[in-house]
Image 1 (cartoon, rainbow, N blue to C red):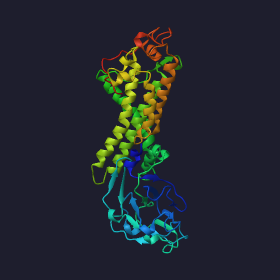
Image 2: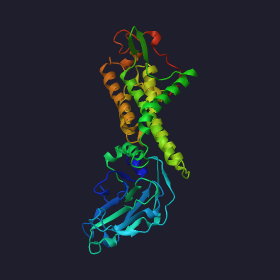
Image 3: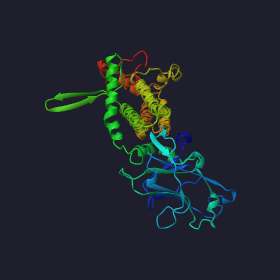
Image 4: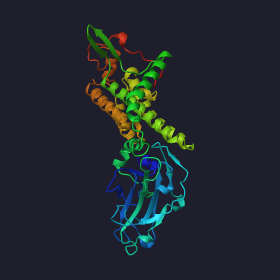
Length: 414
């Protein structure tokens, strides 16, 4: 699971702290980026000549500063070394001479673009200058002072980075979608409208369009059976949908919405800047992160609608993945993969993985609580209109005209 954020390269941190000054939550060896606006930075308290920095061994501290744009270097000052970040408490540190920005980088996992103001060879600070004798302020700081003399409005959007090590807590791992959304919003890209628009409007319209296109070409499609009828002045809504189908539909909307939101921000980050292969990496990330779970949802939904009715569990999984998805024990696969998708590059922004887990829980509880000593789930009989079949319970079947007919191959993916 660590590889998800390890590829991102650092643990993002947000907040204002005291006067926009932060203290790293982890040790200085762990890679952390503090996202800030305007004057501020971070400071690390020095306890002794050996803690937290081994000054006797000349330990080098990894640091960096990255910016959303190439701001005029004369409109701010950067201080690195012995000093404090909070104004009027300590000296700001040693002035760092800014010469030029490095080549911009597109971050494919969070869909952001940044420029470092420090050459790679200069991103280390020798801790010998941080002995208590040499550093009466007892702090190591990376501090920026915004002079507010730019022609453009708004504060400098930047991030102060410390450390290179890759180590993440479980909470940080599962927080990846929050990091992505915050970077898309006010923390970096500053485009906040894409999430509600993508989830509430674009994703449902996208799924509707794909379904209509497949229907027009003669394919059967997966969608909720919702019908409206007018009786006098009363509008009735009818349909034959299980709880699992509602979860599957919501999951598809969530994964589609997340992919659309990520794609929009990939364009925001790339347009007007130097093109690199990271764009294609970002495209692959958003398609894989949301496409793989969507494919699983479709196979499970397909198996629910048109899955084979076999009593031998070995026969159930002897053909293909989509047939295994009809097996009742596949509920455990849904639950476990739903948990795993929480760590997959922001897949579905929590909602998609949660719907897969809930569908698995519903399948597990309903199929096994209603079984009559057979491996065929009760829901198949109800959906197919098979009275008295496995789990059918002899109840009133659905009319044969409304029962779906199984295709020869699982051809539909929406």
